[in-house]
Length: 238
Image 1 (cartoon, rainbow, N blue to C red):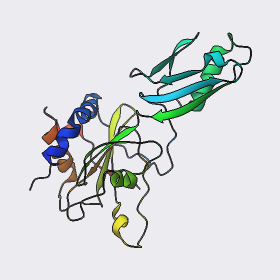
Image 2: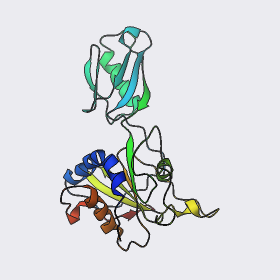
Image 3: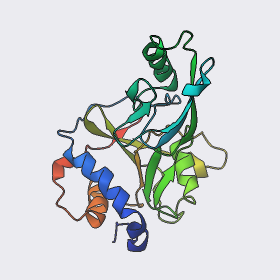
Image 4: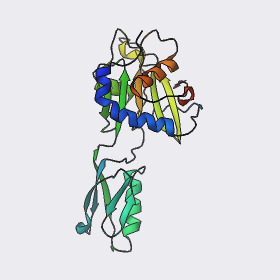
């Protein structure tokens, strides 16, 4: 049985996927501890590619429209380079108020997010269209799957959907059951909010070992050797 994704879909997105999977492999030892299921909407943190507007109430000459650079920084008048990646708009605003305080009498500043181009997730496996999708705001696993056209009803195993995530210098995985999507009035599917750079994989039905299926999926599109220890066994998101 061929447990890989169709080659035509893979080629359309493999360059970006290589980057994220390589990043996963190079980030040291994986952690197997079960993480709390992120059922609440995640806090918005700025990422490379996001576009923000910095506006001053009493010093409009310093207003800026900036895109967060690949190194996570923006460059502003007077204060120069400022790290934006990983901060919330509110955190960045407070930092800018302090930086501009010696230069502006009333450093009232607003940080407005205009676009979130750096927020993307990858969806693959038994879905209608594999590849990257943008996250303009909070997005659940179910919404991400619908964004790529939904799942393949005859072959998709919705009881063991896998989410791979980078967190705290480790690579974690979750296994969640979203089969209630097709239950027709049954219990609601678990809500699981995604984060930028997450990988969502919908396996095939009747796969005995989901861990091996994920490893096989990655091997088919990644032209390097992937060791057996590079993937943390799926943890149920309870």
